[in-house]
Image 1 (cartoon, one colour):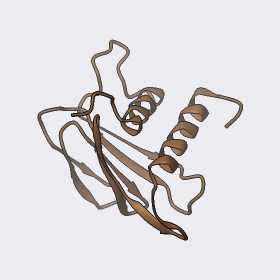
Image 2 (spheres, rainbow, N blue to C red; image 1 turned 45 degrees about the vertical axis):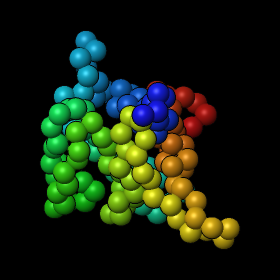
Image 3 (cartoon, helix red, strand yellow; image 1 turned 30 degrees about the horizontal axis):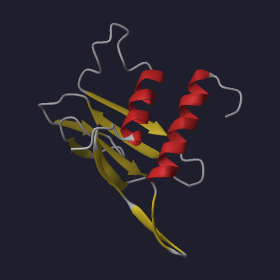
Amino acid sequence: MPEQVSKLFTRLAELADAEGAVPEDGSGIDGTWTTTIPARDRDRDWSVAMNADVDEDHVVEDIPSEGDETTVQAGSATVWLGRWPAGVIHPFGGQVAAEQIDNGPQSIEDELIADIEARISSLRGDADV
């Protein structure tokens, strides 16, 4: 197993903290945290459900769209782009979708990370967002 926590998972945890989902006493997120992240270069946004419990799967409703129901695995996060599944990640890896562009398939992970970082900056009031 890799020793380094994945950058995408780390950024999602930082976003949860920036949104106030992490208790100040350091006890960690209770259950499942959900959010929507604006996708700056697309016509639909990202939806995220992160299950902070390490031993219990959770069902989330209305993610990615009203009326939807999804099971999020223990200790993982599921990401959608609009209504399309875009990835399932955990602290040490996972899978993120790729899209076909002119020179072959390309992961959308870097784009998602950049959108998360922009959201964190806007929540913190950074001027260069």
